Length: 304
Image 1 (cartoon, rainbow, N blue to C red):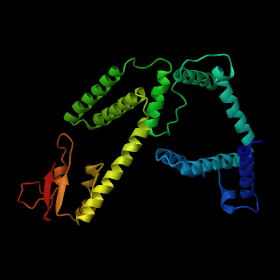
Image 2: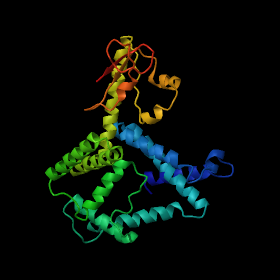
Image 3: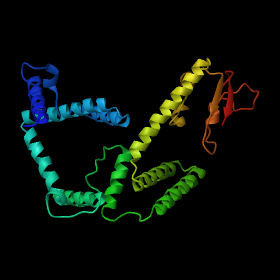
């Protein structure tokens, strides 16, 4: 047995001791379901560590993932569902069966065709009716959109040129602009979904993970915003950023509640994209700039 195999056996023994009658009370009371939030958290910690190229942390987090795999299998075995050996047998058989170009006589000339064969074999094994089955609805929306598009592409449902993908993106943006110009709120949501789906498809066509790209942009925005806050703090300026998902609900609240959200500021700035939607009503006015008056408290309002 290799050193890795020996260490894996040691991990199995440790988990068994933790779940023994004289082991850890917390570990003994866990279920497959109760561990899921921790499992998901560990996966995201791996993602974060890989993004940061912190390989020391990646090493540690992968160990945590293996702990969860062994823990889940141990609980399943205690409940008489299956054991770890059966799970390992399943994945080993699957890998051999779905790689006939490695363990058999088939030939493939590109990674795309290898993945295409994998999807075809999986579809046959699972006896699925649609090629789009098997993509969990619980996946983050960007990841699920890209996986659905990938699966469709493996059976030839795809654009042949990137220019056509760009055309589709522009088409969806124009439809969104039209819906926005007519203030069709339900339709706006649908069109924003179509725009996002088209952009994800463009990312897939360019061999970019849309989820990874947006996650890194979120990180970049957070970092830059933190620097702006740091600069403002050094200058003695305090700011509060308010994003309001639904002003219809906000408007039903008391003025005291609204003020607690908007903050006791002397200057309020409303920033809108392309055209005015009505945020200006929350920018109080001192009656000097002809800005909309929200209530009697003195505050200058500016619309950007």
